[in-house]
Length: 73
Ligand SMILES: [Zn+2]
Image (cartoon, rainbow, N blue to C red):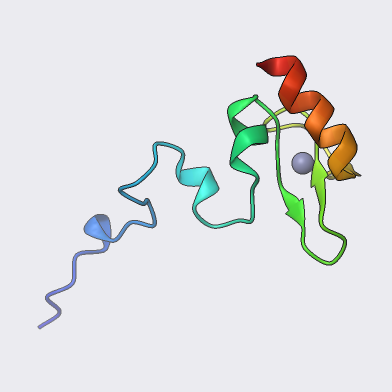
């Protein structure tokens, strides 16, 4: 008597087209620039490696993140 259908349970949000952004702390401006953009909350730094990069994230400060955003636009 289980009325739930797992196939309909989704973590996707209706407000975005990137489901990978819905469950992490990501800077949207960097994500749109094609970067991993994952935010390391304790330090506030952001991963500037390409999206779906290999290996661990490499976090950089806001100045470098701003350079990336401005370079991609
Ligand atoms: Zn990363």
